[in-house]
Picture 1 (cartoon, chains in turn blue, purple, red, brown):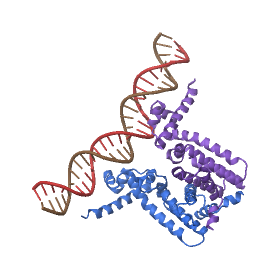
Picture 2 (cartoon, each protein chain N blue to C red):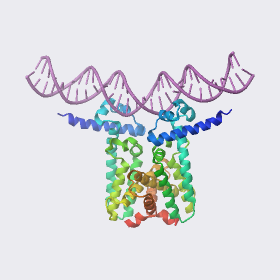
Picture 3 (cartoon, each protein chain N blue to C red):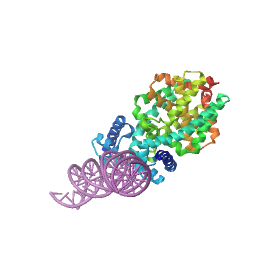
Picture 4 (cartoon, rainbow over the protein chains, first blue to last red):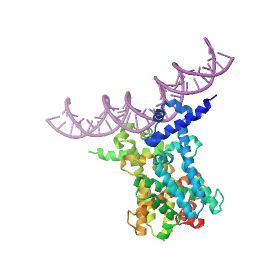
Length: 193
Length: 193
DNA sequence: CCTGACTGTTACCGGCGGTAACAGTGGTCG
DNA sequence: CGACCACTGTTACCGCCGGTAACAGTCAGG
């Protein structure tokens, strides 16, 4: 039975079409639009992905895996902690700069976050990844409260600043990542006293 | 003409009904459900608020004004900067703890954020408020890039950590606000080296 | 040639946001 | 008094969405 082989290829093609539509229309892409982009009709989409959440989950997984891999690379690279953090923040910003529509889809779309109950939200996975890194670096238990809270806070910090930057574009990317690294290293506390 | 007087009272009643439905059903409250809660039908809602975004904007404004007022009070209170920041974070957490549904509505609802193009998103207003505070405290220009970026980052940090905490509830509120204040004062940088 | 699995379609369902068009009601004028 | 008018309220509809049932073509294997 060669159907299974074609099935996977088809699934990839459908995901590519969905990706194109999301990049064009934003997170409000409708199933009919995605089906039209792929040159087919809605029921085929539903046969492949179940509900809309399934498609969104599969779509999100592709991008999150890519981004998380890139972040792991920079996070686990050598060098002093501060430079490593700076490079990691910059990597994140570079990705959201290159594909803002995809990024908005990952972060804002409720469907992607609540998808299938299986693929957790992109932000959640990022927090967990960073929490593990922090716990390892500080010699804490992997499920330490401090590591988890700080990871969530740092992810939110970079994400919110990145959101704002995508809309204002009022500085160079390097400058933004430098400012955030400073903030993370206590520059605000020092300046405020 | 006493209609105008009644109009405002009616508007308040409708907002109260919408508030009740949102608190019960979350951000996915439908216009029909809100109308039913108020004992009327949909077109009346639309006559008062235009589109759904208008209602959501009005609803958001109520809560944001209350919350922003509370935050301004703690932010502008006396005391050393670190204690002030700690108290402000704790105020924010207390509010989202007391009314998580309202909070989710304010932060997650796209309608509230994009509402009418007029009432900007709650998060945006919070960022601007904090940016002004930081710029004032550090003696910077009110539109200084550093203040804007840091404000956005800090708001995102507290919000993300608060989100996570609402779901896990794995510590006391005071502990969480203390951890976030530490992070803001550079504890992570110090620990990481 | 018939059966059955697979791929594809059309046509529908219920629910949503939003609106048009009409019905009741009570003041204000000639 | 009746004609008018502004206002409040309703029902009934539109188009779009996510999701699905039911049917049509195609092709392998007995």
